[in-house]
Image (cartoon, rainbow, N blue to C red; front, side, top):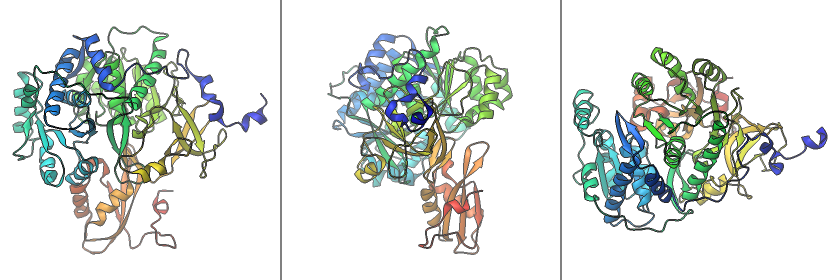
Length: 567
């Protein structure tokens, strides 16, 4: 083929990326083998029985235990008079109760609403009301947040878990330390709340009422800011998640062409399970292939994370650039034996080349970078696992997935031309919950999801992100929408106007910087930061505040954030 015609070919039309695929990875997925996540879950639990599914703080949960405890949760939920498709919120870190509750909800025919446990009352109230959640499972450390908003929501059932609930005798010690020594449980009072243990025993020894759940039923409402910043629920169906699990599983196969597969793969689960990356790549994929997931409740506690890593032969480690960077600067991590590592996945934010190169040198295992969003369940593209060099790209579209680079008018662009990355495949959400307006904005007429990220595709089908179309700020893999930060800051009576942008940060990739014009000349940085801390979860809070006499605006008076960005 001569270069002239080649240059004018639309890459998506020819699926040019297929020629760069690893051997053994199919272009298209075979039809799904399961009718629902619950169906896959039950099959895996009976197949892997006594093998460890999850471990946390030295306590293991076998597939058998997982089946039994999740069934007890499901039975109890069904007895509360909830209807098929009702939403149930889960507000927990990575502890054994998390998968037990999530799979219990799905098996009983309900929809999971994942909630970040560190949300402020304002953020939680929006999510509970928007989703119409009827019940919530929460760790006692965060029950005080639920207490503050409960009366203004439709939540009728509150189940409160303690850190030690599933840790056996050790649980009493853990609870004592968490409550009395570390004082991590603020006082709360919810008279109608039930304990997690009482719910398990209420469901004990009973069978679930069978519910007809199909591939196109919603499994999760995964909240994300999308392009506009009002937090919206991406409707992810059983088909979306099972397809993405399958896309990852066939990709994973290429890793075992040159090396032996261990009897049981061990995953490190350091990313939060309420985030779509860990939910699909760790939890769902782990269960599907009979893997053991080592749950890390607080990855910020590096010494204890490294200790956990030293006690297990970790094979698969999905993480973020910030986490890899922090680990390499930890003296104990440097001493670990990394020979068991087979795959390290980088996602959620760009992996920086110096981090990737240093990681490969230190561990002998390359970081394979991929790309995805809550709206794509999440994985849309991935680099080859069987290649050691760091490509600096987000890789190739995974099986059954098409990526088209489009201009402002939605026309496909040719190789090397920068446009919006648009994605079509079985893992793409069905839309935003109760937001047909936002769904219409996010989808093209021919069924592609507009990611809001700008990039190009090269001649081999590899995609490179160059910029974000939206003003979104990416802090340690979490989306921060400037208008949400601005709205909160503007609630302070001392603020006349403000604008938030992302500035480069060596630890978190980007940090939030807020420019403020004062209404009250006595307003201080500390006072405004405290106000933001009351209303925004940690990663959304402005790290830097700069006071100005005025902000750059368009002739119409719209604040120009781009003028404030560091040149």
